[in-house]
Image (tube, rainbow, N blue to C red; front, side):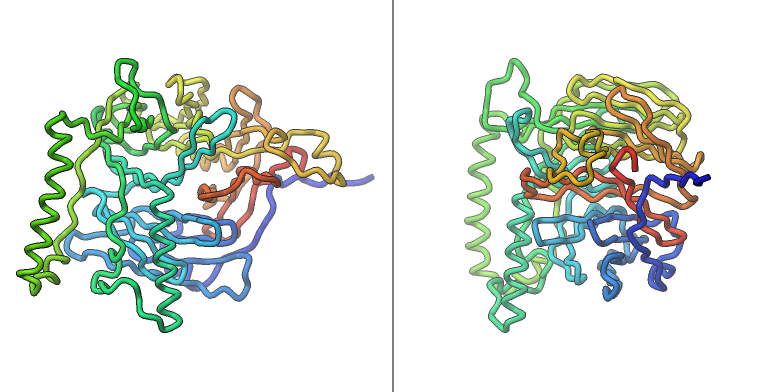
Length: 450
């Protein structure tokens, strides 16, 4: 009689266990960011880059130059991917954003806002039959503050840096003569900054996408974004964010005239006091003023507190965990909760796509590559107290599978790839599983019957 093989529902990719990993300390508190073939781990002061696909890869350590006075530490990391360009982005407890190459070279350093960076989110929505606009950005989440960097601005900065780094490698004279403050040799990255703390401090937040302007407001070229936040005072709160800072007509005129006047005076002053030019560069960067944030709604349910959220690829759904062990599925366009799970304390969630087209699954010899329509959106819920991962079909579908996982496991997901084309073959949204104790990296199988 044939024995039935036990399904694992996941495939092991490799192992990153090494001496450098053990030097980082407590594995349970490490920050992490994953790419398709590599993993970045960080404690409070050191970042370690590892690869499970390249056996010849040597682990790379990055030790950011942090302030010893404040004291400053690493509070968030993320991987950014632009075609063949890959960088590591670091957020600090003092509100700084640092960009590093995979060789550990500092590319850019910029002050966002005084305070701890809670999370870095990479988000992208492509223009298609449903979405009439496209948007790609990096969002910096802080306590009551959210900043947005456009993907094209980051890409232009990185392209200039890599071109200059290549020219220096070949012995050419660098384009930028100002190398004393190398991390800012390309100027400040433009960004928008909003205060989303009207309903109290937030523990997590995200931009869900572009939304229409208020009904009574004239149409303009300014974009409006919807932001959803979770926190201690309000479990869920939502805001309409405007690129306009909401100034009056006089303020708008002054905002154009004053910078030009200051720029002229500054240029004239530099001609007279050129000797003080070096010291002026060392002045601490100051955050820019807030753009307009209009509250839309909030849900207060004491003593329940919002803890974490994750956003679906289209931005239309958000899964929110709270302090009472519940998971809320929020429709971010209608701003209503459409589903609720109970009994999931300390849970974490990630969206993924499962192949449900039976014709594709059953016919392995088929020449047709699976398309987006062959997949269904699901929510992966990691319940560490139960030692399992559950996969639920969205929005109101059943639980498709239950996957046991070892203690010390953590779900990870590669960030959005900037500039990725919609052409075939379609790359579904996957979830990786990292076990900090063993160093093993696995991927959850995307076929329903595998």
